[in-house]
Length: 223
Image (tube, helix red, strand yellow):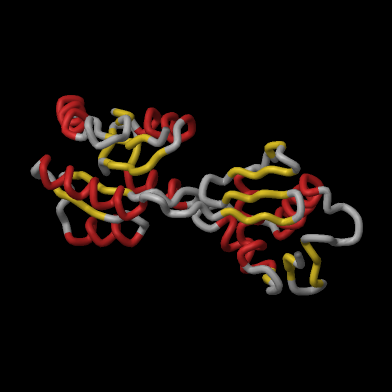
């Protein structure tokens, strides 16, 4: 069952919010640190996230950016940071709402309810190709009903290729999409290595059936 992920380092406030949301129809995963939030996200299906910004071991903005690389559930920032620049940053990186402290629990509850209703019944982004099923919302992949284990890099490459089926993507575009924000220098050879690994996992090692190399430019998904 999907849950509400609540990340708030003030334990009394966190418990009060959890109590206010207890009859919304979703279990509340109360987390007090960024590490706990990441662990909960990795272990549970999440319907909505409520995130503080200033945490003892990190930053809620960075966590939001990380979530948005793979997940599309609604996110509400709940924080004492009330500067206009913070609010704009929160919304621009993918939050659906930004509530500043102090706040009304009734208002928070209403906003949570509205976002859950908006997302209720939304179809997952499923793509079926031959005996493959790609779920890009949950980042879960199957081949002939068997889970296909892909690294984060391979997941992002596959998503970019499939969503741009028939289009030739340049190596520069792909590197920027897959590794943007990593803060690391990425050698172009890293893309070739990642593509080869993805091909091997898809069983696409003979004449290109899925991922075609466009020499001198980049790659395209041909199915």
